[in-house]
Amino acid sequence: MSSVPFTDVLFSQHGHAGVIMLNRPQTINALTGPMVLAISHQLRIWSEDPDIYVIILMGAGELGLCAGGDIRALYTSGKAGDGQAETFWRDEYTLNDAIARYPKPYVALMDGLVMGGGIGLSAHARHRIVTERSKLAMPEVGIGFLPDVGGTWLLSHAPGETGTFLGLTGTAFGAADALYTGFADILVPSNQLQSLIDTLADIASSDEVSALLQEAAVKTETSSLSLQRADIDKVFQGDDAESMIAAAKALRTDWGDTVANTLLERSPTSVKVTLAALRRARKLSSLSACLEMELRAGLQILRGHDFYEGVRAQIIDKDRNPKWQPATLTEIDAATVAAHFDPA
Image (cartoon, rainbow, N blue to C red):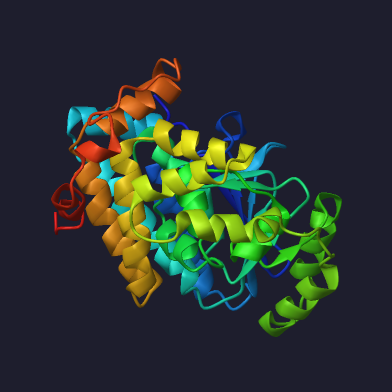
């Protein structure tokens, strides 16, 4: 039997641009282990290719760049205890770090939906482009996990407590908020992306990339997070999730009630571990250190209950009714949270 060609990620040269096309549009380009390894390998090749001046990351289809990692595969691996989930995360985080350190301009086109693992492929790039269709999120607390792929680094360095809000609630945000929080650099209209790709392919050197991108950028609307900043900072200050819920309720606003209810619906373990991870990330010196911390926490979570229950409720059975264990924030003590950051 002949082998089936690997087409989940496509690589091509367009002029002086090396183009990475995530090619699983039926899953909004959800990221798999073989895709991670293929991208890592190709980036190493292009880093030494004198004809490649710039890397461009994009996604196939109209829905988005990447909806995240293949959660169903991670669920199956964790249940089986075959080690593939652990291997995927190690390889993925290595790629995230390599993207941040890449020696040539790496341009991520964050058009449409960009979540989880998609953030890891794009938001650590040297040049990060959003469009009017962009919708970003780190929704891991909703499936019993924590923001990873360097998400704790990005969220902990967002203005004020906006990153804490986004990480603990999993709230999706658009282009203006992505620019405000530091997840992206410029806005380019989606109907101008192909023209931008062609322009980048024609550059005479890597030094031209920044100027060309600034020429293509357009103004965006005011960030809604910036307008909500005072309330966000008031609610999400400190290191105690229960106090955050009380502060949200005390606002006596629809927004405050929504925040409180959202936190109460999320995995209590994930809320507390994520909050601890974000506070630790603020004190860490680099993305690499955050990735190491996230891996330790992720491996501990994989040994627990809530990740499997969250994926079951959201993706497998789709009943949207997870039964978290423990069921409340008060049942989770500081020692339990701290254990998630111990070496695996």
